[in-house]
Image (spheres, rainbow, N blue to C red):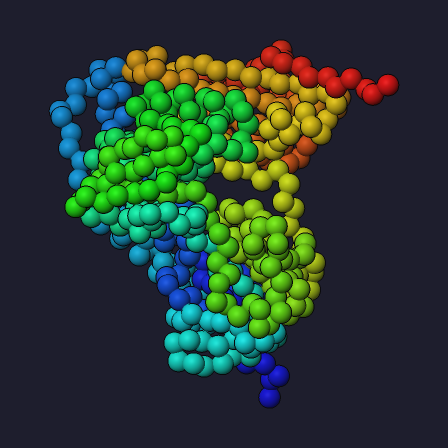
Amino acid sequence: MAEFDVDLFVIGGGSGGVRAARIAAGHGARVMIAEEYRMGGTCVIRGCVPKKLFVIGSHFRQDLEDAAGFGWTVPPASFDWPTLIANKDKEIARLEAAYTTNVEKSGAQIVKSRAVIEDEHTVRLLENDRKITAKYILIATGGAPNHGAAIPGIEHVISSNEAFHLKELPKRIVIQGGGYIALEFAGIFAGFGSDVTVIYRGDNILRGFDEDVRTHVRAEMEKQGITILTGCTVTKVDRHGESFTTHLSNGSSIGSDQVMFAIGRHPNVANLGLEKAGVAINPNNGGIAVDHFSRSSVDSIYAIGDVTHRFNLTPVAIREGHAFADTVFGKREVRVDHANIPTAVFSQPEVGTVGLTETEARAQFNHVDIYKTTFRPIKATMSGRDTRVLMKLVVDGATDRVLGCHIVGDAAAEITQAVAIAVKMKATKADFDATIALHPTAAEELVTMRTPTARHVRQAAE
């Protein structure tokens, strides 16, 4: 008789947990995975995928306007929010079914229940109070929206979760936050015709991104009519029937039909039984503390993805899940390299970035060269739209290695994914220069910038 019911019990059916379960099962492990909501997790069900569908949908309004410059006469168009929601729901249901099928085909067993940890080798399924023993337990419960400190009227505020299921498009919406989710939904709602106001506590949006990117994105969003108020926060939300008044720390107030907070996400660690099992929490970020192989303070319990609060990106969770399964069940140690992770903000305009910002590079290297250009995209020359693309390379002046690439404009994410390969391979600026341009494209600017626009040399200490 086997010592344990299963070799691996995975808590959480999101992208990371699913990848770990499938790979582990492929290595011959007996795997069970528990999901209390829907298979696919945040990314598939109420995150990256539906958000990208909304972003694509919101672009059509601008595309229809731009068509006139190319000779098209387009009759007045109308938009139906319920149709968008219904079609989005169909696609998400299809993806959820695909996730479920792929897990089952791998040989892993899915249980639809919340699971909590009883001890280092035991989980309890709340659905039927059943206990399962496992040689290893993997926590992949992700993160959840965080509304911050309680304020009067916080119960009237929605998160991105609820935004995907609104019954109607708000004519006016106030969004608090200055990161990925806040700016992406600002562009989405503005694209569909809503009047959008963004509130952010810092001096500028996109904290942590390159300063030129932050400035460029803000200017472009404001050109589109999005109001961005920085240096203030929401202090109170009053409801008046179906409308709201949002009060700000600067003494002003704003009327709207919806108020949305997107000020961050916290690791989903509550009520999992972590304390009972002795699993330590990282005091610096509130996530489960893990080593380079995603092992927690308990040898038999691992954690991956957003619940560790390391790099909260779906592809990172997937890579960590795969590495865990290979390490524990594939008989080969695989350590995830978290350096030079590409990322995108599907704001409007879109942002793609990989590697170091100019500020980070100048703090780490004595000689940093900057290559930067802004230009009008070819489409805008005919459409007449007032918009510009930003391309920027950050280079180590001593070794010529490209340390970072930052792009704002159409297809920025697609371009950055390809450039990330070169950055990961430690390509030099000479390698970029030796690459023949693909013309006419926006991306050709990355291989045609020859002269530094800025050169920063740190003087050696005497």
